[in-house]
Length: 207
Length: 223
Image (cartoon, chains in turn red, yellow):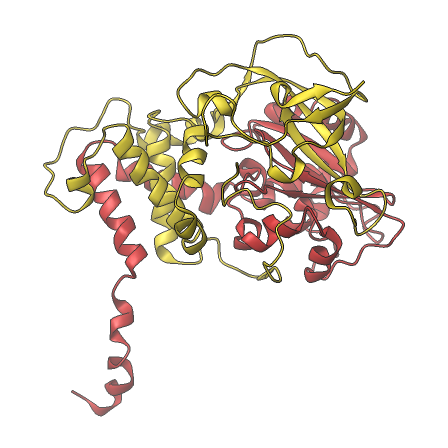
């Protein structure tokens, strides 16, 4: 064996699957053999959430809410019906309500009991959203938690924490930043971050 | 009383790690765990409510120890066993012959439409008893009144508090019933605002609120 392979050999064990990787493989094999799951359907599910559904969907809703008063009015009147017309409802986002941030009120969303999240609009939730720390703390001390995201709220702004206990999913419409005046929907979409639609961040000028 | 998943307001969890730039799936096996859970879920063998109940019913030490997708897998295994789809021996690795694909199993060609359709929980049902601005008191203790230790969606931190109805969501499937195969039992669902000072005693700021979606049977009128 050539000498320069030595450094690669001592950690070759890390190429083996972890316990959890073995567990998922065992369960996938079992359910597939039982005819309960089609691996091709699993691949199609992954294709949806890796390539088609993600925060870009929600960002477009927010950008249009900023740019098109009639669309914002429709969202306010009936978010679910409006998103249905746009083809933006789906699994874990069958019923949706938008909540708008203002100078007086900042909204932030959590699911303390599990990890409910508006999948058709934001995709798969990030680890922090599903973490014990976020679930346990953001209802009791939202301002301290938001500060951990670098978001310090002025004392004049009240916080509303939305605990998603039912099948209603909440999408935060962040305040439109100064400096975005005059931009069209496509440009505005780039100002809308995932976290700004959960309430742990603000919309911001794209890098 | 409550279970380990019901952690809203709990002390002692340390800081949140925002992990900017985190990949969609942190570990490669998370991809298969997510897809497997959604694929078997779409076969209609159990509801989202049963699925949540299976996750929160894990032993407290397992719930705390296992990661998000590990809990998903554990719940799928437990539900598959409970519904008679697999045996303990098969979960432990016994040989299984290849069976034909179940007629109810989700096919690749059905995936996009099925994910777009989802499983709406809105149903026809009784007229709402409460209207926006009504004051209500939530059940104390937070519990499933049909099944001891059963599924409920009233967080313990909000039990026994006075809230204000802010929105009527229409009638929705009642998880307390549906999770236990007792029927969908739809009833009016409301958005309810609770004052942070009432919930926590010492709020970070006067006027902050927690908004919670609660079913009508969780609530009683406040005169």
